[in-house]
Image (cartoon, rainbow, N blue to C red; front, side, top):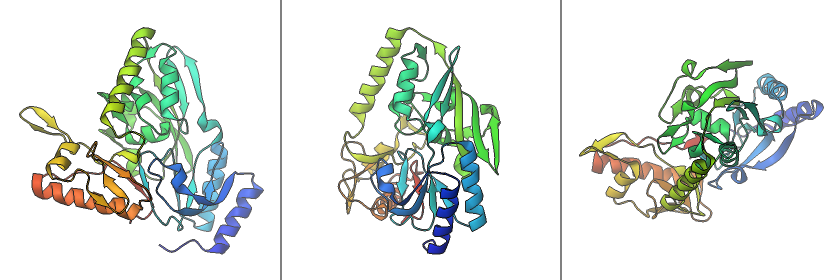
Length: 316
């Protein structure tokens, strides 16, 4: 796609300013993702309420400007040239969570999962400890049905509040299509998660603290530390060998790709299901590695791996 016309950008800026909707110009998106990869978008809009989101979306529609929503950016590969759209990133009330009592919590989509779920667990409630090890924003965790160590976010959810087709909707988990690392929100890109309500059971604080530490230590020992990545690049294929599940990293390792490099992107020598940015990697280089992995694993292991990391904008 072509870059946005300067006239439309100028008109949008006027509408946003006139309605006091926060925004930034020429925003470097690489600083908003864990990969530290991505180009500059013309406008980054940061609405602080549902009303401001609806107003911004109305402006985008009237000006026929394409847009995408960006969250915590921890499971994302951002285009090298995101100059053909504007980006929406929630702020304000969406960065807060509320204790509703009785183990119920309403959590804003723009809250950081690691500190929020650690804090909630340390209040004496159990069941969400695993979420404290998953970086990113709560909205993204809903969209992906994030999980690890046998737990999935949708196991805890009582209600999701989201915006779709200009309306604010609330749905119970059984009313939302979801499965392993997927939900209907991955297909409906026009949906914007606003808040999520969960319910947890009370637990023993010492046991909860031990669970938090155990999961944190396990994650730290099994994943590349202090490396720029987007987490697991591929979904585990759900195949078994002699009764044991075969993970994506094992297939990549069997295909002889541990440490494989394209430009500044590398398949991690520590964990083959991670692609790391060793310096100034480009999205196109990461995508090249993704293609190499899928082709080689398909050829050597007869398994087609599906990406877990989402592409944002046009990649490559």
